[in-house]
Image (cartoon, rainbow, N blue to C red):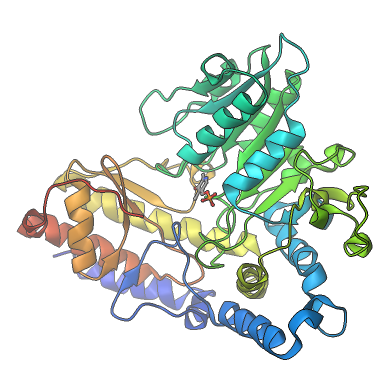
Length: 427
Ligand SMILES: *Cc1c(COP(=O)(O)O)cnc(C)c1O
């Protein structure tokens, strides 16, 4: 049992929360406390309405949905890029709403990796990044006739949880042409100093980009001002655009003269999309990196979901609440879970923390099963991490307290020991 006064504190924090009203805009799973918005954000009413709107347009218009009269599918991605740009601190024409995270990394490597000099053709990543990025980089090197064993480098972690920025800078070697790093590490939730790393990379002539899958919608970025060369992300985590929703990319305007590495008809000038010319006349800016017809049904919910970010006052106010929620979780975990064998592995410095809290425990897999049975949705990342992600738009301080209380109770009563010890992977 946690001290009762904590309930009063949670109630006071919830009562003072100016974003609490947005909770009612979401379909919250009945009887559950959902803390997995960093894997799949929940469905909001505006996102649902946007899908319904597109279905209605398809039903009523057929092919005319691509036409101009009242059905703007033709420029839907550009409209959404303009709505999304403030979240990453970019101009509208530096953002392209397209493809998946991994597909966008392939496109950006094809566009920006220039192994023209034999002395400078390595790509730098890190050993803690999401595996898909490493797969994309290795396969891209092979396509260019380079062996990943010699041309792909990974910055090592000292503690297996975080990256030391001094180690990253030290890895910016003279033979590295391009670097890809996560803005927020998907396991520990460490937030890297994007501005500093960009400065250090540029001082050494290295092109640098960030995977923002775990930061977009939770952490503000200033990609243009920081001079970042490129970035890419998914929309199904903190952006709440739905399973497999269309992703996005950022291409700094200093690169807008470049031809797309992977070209397609959707990347031509908007008014030339149906001109059917075999000459590729690239669209202005990042939109030139479109490849084929956008998946309109997976684009629509993003537009609806973004309405709530604007209504909530933008990413800065969401970040403020997100940091308060994770600070509260860390305080509770330190006081009530650390004595039970948990360790908070997420950085405590707010300037180094993304949107979730990672708890390490040797029995993390069984604890996650027991938490789910107790009505809390966390997620497990092998080998020993329980991730709790309170989303600023729909989670409360009381829910964070409840999650910690139930987790403490599970350990105290050894309720998790009834679950099989096999460590599986959870999606
Ligand atoms: C979720 C995530 C991905 C997912 O890639 P998809 O192509 O969208 O499946 C990639 N990178 C990171 C860092 C992620 O967190």
